[in-house]
Length: 246
Ligand SMILES: [Zn+2]
Ligand SMILES: [Zn+2]
Image (tube, rainbow, N blue to C red; front, side, top):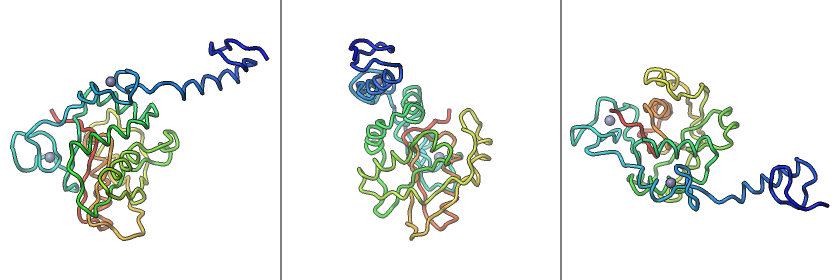
C-alpha cells in the first residue's frame, strides 16, 4: 500500500483509486469545522455579529400580523383573517436571507438551534395546551431536501417552550413549484387548497403554525383555513423572519 497525497490532494493511506479518494474527501467534509451560515466565520453556525444583524420588526406593530404599522393598536388591512395572530423574530433582510438559504438549500440543519433560541427570546410563548404544527412540505420537496426545516424549528421551539408538536395534523395535498419571486395574488392562488388536515386524534383548541420565513402570508393563511375547517378554533403562527411591507 502506497502512502501519500491521493488524486484529490488529501493525504491518505489508501490512495489506490479515485473512489477511495472521494471517501477521504467526504470524511474531511464531515470533520470540517462549523462555520457561520451568513459570513463564513468558523466556530459557530451563526456568529454573534450576524445574530445581532437579524433585526427585530420595528414598532408600533399590528396586533394581528406583528408587522410595523403607523398606529400603536389595532390590525393592519393586510392581515390574514384566518390567522388570529402571527409573530416573527426578525425582518427578512440580507443576513436573514443568507441564513435561510443555509437552512433550506444548503443542508444547514444546525441552524435550527440558534434560530429557535432567537424566536424564544423575541416572541411570546404559546398558551398551555396549544400545539405547534410545522408548515408541511410536499413529498417531492421533502425527498429532495431530506428534511423539513419548519419541522426542525418546531421541535426546537417545543423543547424550549414546553409545548407539544403535532406535525401529522396538516399535509400538503397539492405540490406546486417553488414560490420564490411570485407575487401576492399568484402565491395566494397557489396556496389555496394546497393543505388538508389528516388528524385522527382530538383537536387542540389552539394551533401555532411554525414556518421559517413568511413572505406574503399566503401559505400560512391556507394552512390556517384548513385547520379552521377541521374545527381548530384559534390558529396563530410564528416564524423566524418575515418580509416586511414597505
Ligand atoms: Zn456571521
Ligand atoms: Zn397586520
